[in-house]
Length: 160
Image 1 (cartoon, helix red, strand yellow):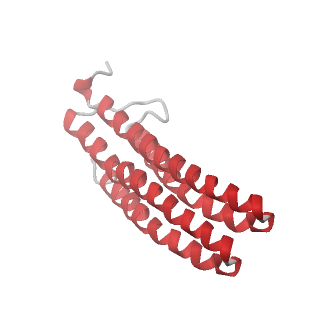
Image 2: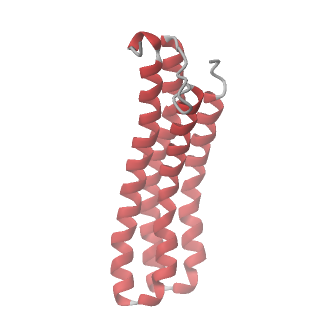
Image 3: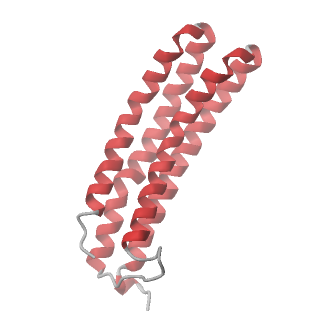
């Protein structure tokens, strides 16, 4: 039986949290940059390439959350059709292992979007500075990568 007592449900909640929260942050970040980029590109269509790169950057956190979600589902046997029996402690461990990328991805994607919006405005005034605008936005990515690494290290520390 797949009940809470098995811990499997807690692990699945962790996988869902990683995917949903990091994905929500990415959607907010990408959407925010897209709004600013549309305004700039409407005035100067030649800035589309730089604006598109800046818009894509906050989307990586959603990918990281999806990766952690897949890893959890694979580790607990739901991918492959052979679900493991998990204790409640193991279930909580999987749920907590998902939290760094879930919360880190949510927050960093939103702030990366805000930084990328500023980069779009920089490109609007000085197109030759697009590299600097990208670097500013990529600096926020560092913390999403650290959250991803922590989630992965925690996941592979759980005995199943």
